[in-house]
Structure formats: C-alpha cells, structure tokens
Image 1: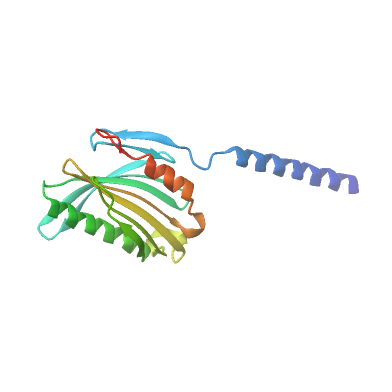
Image 2: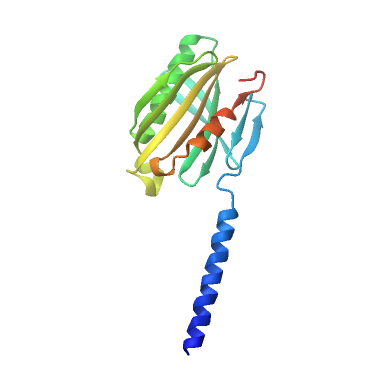
Length: 186
C-alpha cells in the first residue's frame, strides 16, 4: 500500500512538473502588428484586439471614437481614434475629455505629464485604484500610461491600464514604441 501511495505521489509530481514547464513555455504576451488603415495607424498589440465604436456626446458636440483593445489578464492595451473638426481647440477639448474619462476609470491622479513634440499632444502617467466596473479587481492599486496624438484632423489615444502588481514596464514600452502613424515614422 505504501508503494501505491509513492507511485501516485511521484506521478502527480511528474504531471505537475510537466504542466509547470508547459506554462513557462506559453508566451505571456503574443505580440502582433495590427494595421488600421481606415484610422491611419498600426499598433503592436500583446493579444488579438477587439474593435468597438462609440459616440460620445458633450452638449451639442459629439465624438465618434473607435477603440481597438486587447486585454491580457487584468492589463488593458488600447488605441482609440476619432475624426475631428480641423481646429486645435476641438482637439484639445476632446483630448482633455478622453484623459478625464481614463483617469476616472482608476480614480487616478496624474503623476507625470508632458507635451512632447507634435504630433503628440500630451503624455501622462497616473496611479489610482480600479473602479467597480473592472470586476474582481475593484479597489486594487492600478497604473495608467496614456499618450494623445493629433494628426491629419484625427485624435488618437494610446493607453495601457493595469493593476500595479501586474504592471510590466517592458510590455508598456513595447506597446508604445509599436504604435505608428501610417504616413509618418513616429
């Protein structure tokens, strides 16, 4: 009987070791370049992204935002784009509205912000806590990094949002450097 238990324990240990090795071989991120020629960009996503379009009202104005996003665990990698009237005021107004919406998702405060050279309007980093709409992760410390672009009368928002414990600087940098406007090398 003792021999039987030893065999079962040994078999369980071998199966567990094989599963651990198999899990270690699985990529955490499955990077792929996705071109969105209609919106004028290509992005390097860590998983297959979904595409959704929403109309955002604000008084008499509306913005039609198309969001392409890929979740990896509790991490969220996304690119949003929207056509704009050809005014800088409209771009700045909608950029501030999109930034405020992102920050409210995390109950976040901006920790760093700067305005690099065009076509980048603003680059921010923020920290806060995930809100209830994020399910099981509600109330968990989280981080956000977002960059907003204005290019050819189109506004872009590129962002990563994740629980602080799952934040991966290398993946975030890969995502941001993988974003390209199709008619320019940025």
